[in-house]
Length: 133
Length: 342
Image 1 (tube, rainbow over the protein chains, first blue to last red):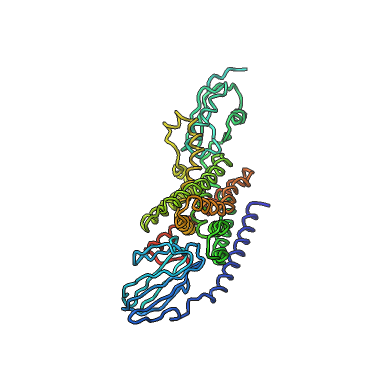
Image 2 (cartoon, rainbow over the protein chains, first blue to last red; image 1 turned 45 degrees about the horizontal axis):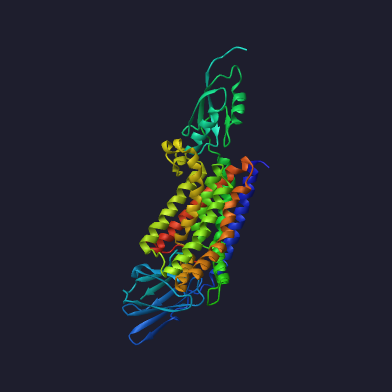
């Protein structure tokens, strides 16, 4: 097979693989737990408590919370041994290794309306955001 | 037979990629009885030979002298080094396919295979397997690929890869024990981690660009010893050639792979030398299959013709991994919003 033909064939195969992957990603896109409005936010007295679970990523990925309120972040782990246990919240300068199973509490000072807080694993491959309104 | 006297011939040297090649080729050619002197140039990838070969045509001389070279071959055409764009026709689609499969692998959430509350040694092993298939592949795997492909190009195939893996596993065993005993790990803060991963990404980028063989100047991106040192220590070069892969393998213990850190955290919490050592040892063992696969792909490509395409593919993948790592590092430090979220 001439090199031109080999190359053309490989490009076709690559296009097929990329399309298949693209389709799979789009299909799964609908099942992401990003639209669970305020399901993980609760109020305790003057503060709001936001629960995030960390295992193979963070869930929910997006949270909507109240601005100008002292906030407590509760991170739950259960048999978590992946990158999500190496949590970092750049805005707060917060960095820790979560225990494999348990609950870790992070105190977050009141945030301005319209701001977001992002938490990531140390490699940046998993993240969660909290929008303060 | 007319005695033509000493003449000067210039030959193109195939496979000359580094400063060590210059030295090696000169030394080897000088051993030929008829060669008076040999002077190689990395810049022009050619060698100037002075010797008395009588009337023989250059092609014959080139062929005879090639037999003296262990790593290279000579050809009479002193042409400007051509970029083999054809090889990109093979390299680009393969690299794209691999990247797409990598993305798919991450999206599939293979991480969720690991569960259970306590870390047993088999858990550690499983975490290692998962880690080597995750973003960590872009960090550690990318490094492995870039180094092994570069060494393969220099003709050194199995030894550096084996030494790398041995060094890595040994270091995880020993350092795992150390942190278990000492009860605290070498924890870099975010800034430190950022600069470390940035450094690794830049290193990979340099090796990746060099593997592409597109730019003349890129051969100088390859880390090597300065000439005046290697001239004196050609024997020692081989020694450092042996040590370097093992050292780099050992240094991977400190690479910012989230899974490694999670395991190290656990090792520290055991407070025990043995538990710490064995946990990290089994973790490293878990990462071995995927990493070994990456490093030994260079062995699978035997024929000369396929080699060029392989190195370009490796170069492209390494560059993609490097860019991926830079994006992730910038996100982890809060400079940019996370680009990838599996």
